[in-house]
Image (cartoon, rainbow, N blue to C red; front, side):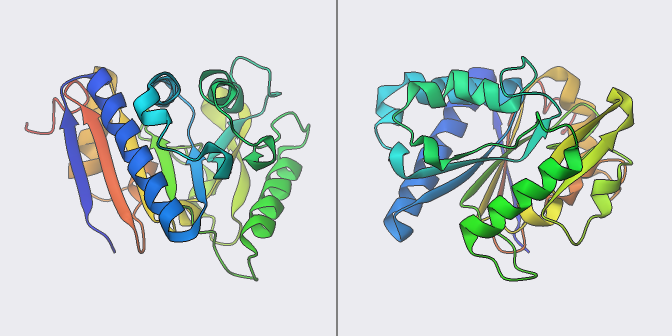
Amino acid sequence: MSDRELLILAGANELFRCGAEEFVRIAKDSFEDRGVFNVVLSGGSTPRGLFSLLAADEALRSQVQWRKTNFFWGDERHVPPDHPDSNFRMANEVLLSKLAADSKRVWRIKGEIENTETAAEEYERTLIGHFHLADGQLPRFDLVLLGMGPDGHTASLFPGTKALQEQEHLVVSNWVGKFDTDRITMTARVFNNAANIVFLVSGEDKAPALKSVLKGPSEPEQLPAQLIRPVDGRLLWLVDQQAARLLQA
């Protein structure tokens, strides 16, 4: 199991820059190795800053072969793709619409489907087909981007929810009682099979959970971000000073 790396950046802008540079480096390595780049995008405000920088900075943007990049999502809300809460909508508005991306390589989760279990099953079939998986095999993503909430959740793996125990499926519908709604999410074992996992954590409100996740006892039922431990890959936490303020305490 790979060791965890932690980089503490001065502020959010430095975090976005570092995250974008990691994105570009991993993409270039993937193109050189296999001619394709498979990336899992995250929702939330911190990835939005990274996506905006990738789209706006020509020096960064020009290094990625966007037409050979496959875009996936780690989770999605139970909303249509044009809804303000949609993770797809955010990434599309901020990043994908600004690029020469191939629409056939944009694999969104269909959060508009009324039954979220059906949506999860469909996305699981998408992964199986794209990666040509046999029974029991897991997809191998080049990069998974993740955020973390103030409660220690990541993707739509929330404290105390059934998806934390999932060992069979790649994608599941997960009821989140605190929001009174279902979410569709990849499972921890899918994330853990990635070659690179990068957490992006920004803001003072994340500090208590970050300290507990990184320095506290193993309690993944309460702190689902602790489930993310790649089997054969790199785990990098990029955090700003506000989020890291309790790590030295």
